[in-house]
Length: 150
Image (cartoon, rainbow, N blue to C red; front, side):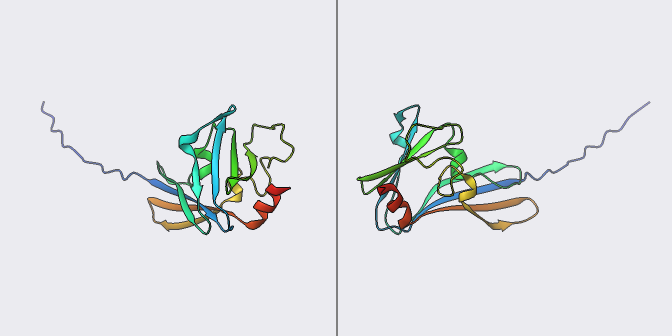
């Protein structure tokens, strides 16, 4: 008895998702985003966004096709971000699991909290059967500065 084995090549196309997050500074001030974890500044992750600048803060590729990955998720497990305007006026944004003691803090879920992914505007920039590219945008406006001054 003789068996003949014939090989069959199956080509699987890997699906992928590209996510890019931008922070847009529409204020007249330089903005620094300074992340903290458990009270410790993580200086290497600080972002500086000039007035009128649109800065790419995350460019992430992921296996599988899906909604993507915005900047706030890349900042886990960091618990807070200090937003500093012109090195003078500051406010703090807390993540979902931090209540904090600062009464002026911008709590998670607020329409101006940078950790709240719904506060990023999502746009699909390219899509086909196997790939999708997303952009997420968060914009600082003059009212953010005015609120920080209070």
